[in-house]
Length: 230
Image (cartoon, rainbow, N blue to C red):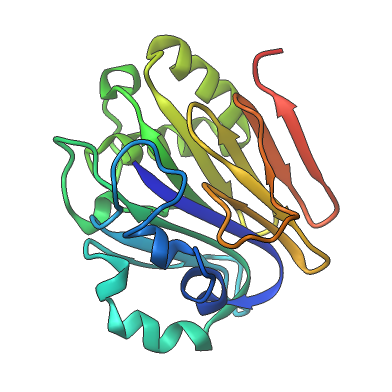
């Protein structure tokens, strides 16, 4: 199991989003509040963001715990972006412990993170997968069929593998797509932008829980939540 978040809005530093919140991803790496599967997320972390220099995202990933990366902590306050996707990882048993198995995964302008687990037999192999872990295979599949079809893909996989947990985050820097499928997901909408996260990173009363088996679509103009089972 993992924890992840995405931000779309006014520029915010990576430190503001990942390290500074009272219950942000840094704390969630060792003491998540809503994680039902696994006690901590110490098997790696990653962040993707969109520099002002162009539309292609940059990534920083590691197979070490987020709390042990002093280099990132020293530069995170200096890097800001209007769109960020980040995750901390708890590797599923039997999955590789390597940087390439850590979200966010990348194709073109798109970044993707998977919070959950899915039977790799339901996905099959994929030549473009960065790793043989389930999340990397899922990312390669989504990038191939088109990220906009994430809802259809999640419903199909959930039918093939009823035990799957398929909370997915996707962004191209201008739009965030997210699914809640058998795990927790929350949204914080502010005047500055929108956060979509596995769990609230603070106790702001404006956080709202996304209903089970729903799709979230965030743009700079609106937040739309759709039932995936209708």
